[in-house]
Amino acid sequence: MKTRLAIVVAALLACLAVGASTASAAVSIPSFAVTLSGAQAGSNPDLAVAAKFSTSSGDAVKDALISLAPGAMVNPSAATVCQASNFQAGTCPSSSQIGDGTLAVTELSLGAFQFPVGLYLIQPQGSEFARIGLIARFAGSPMVRVSAPVTFSGGPNAGLDIYLNGIPNQIGGTPARTDAISLRLFGTANGNAFTRLPTSCGPAQTLFAIDSYQVAPTAATAASSFTPVGCGSLSYQPQIALGASVDPGDNGVGFRASFTQAPGEAATSSIVLFLPSGLVPVSY
Image (tube, rainbow, N blue to C red):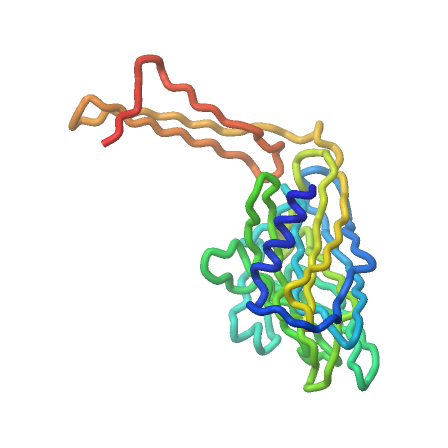
């Protein structure tokens, strides 16, 4: 997984602001864990990540990248989309909620606080696969909002990346730092399956990376693995459709092929299309 870890770190660094700081402060990740409410391959369990941070010299976590294990997916159409105005007002409807959690924050002049967190499906931007909005509340009021794009990472072990951009280092004008974060993605959101585990039963590693406000170009990383079970019980009933039609304008033939599967089926490792002998592709 070294290649995958390098991809995660590179992706985090690519999202950072240009320019290095000369400060010596930094953050680290003493603990990081992924837990599931069930491990059946291809199923839809609650998926939780929890990380603790250590800081020095007044530094604080700025950005975090959660890189889900290859094959672990979320369904961006499971819940309704919370509009931008509702997200900013902290009034996303319950039908858009896709998770919860806690945020442990120390306000440097007031002490430590635990903020309950709601995770909501919000409007994606550009080519994003989805976007998650994090709202942390105190005494019922929205205190922290973080917008997190969900994108596909590249490379041979591609998966989904959730990028928490701009974790605040002050609350209500008071300097603050985030000491820990715990987030849970619901297996079912708004009555629909939201998460899906990989359909292979090898170790599935989730990676986590952070940077800080004072040393932004430096990333600290951690990893946690789980192993799906029960791959032998998965169904495998792909639907294949083929078609051919003669082009009336010349002697060419057009071919069509489609391949579909249900979300919880065993994954397909390869697809090969064999054309009849004597047929050759023509470039125009």
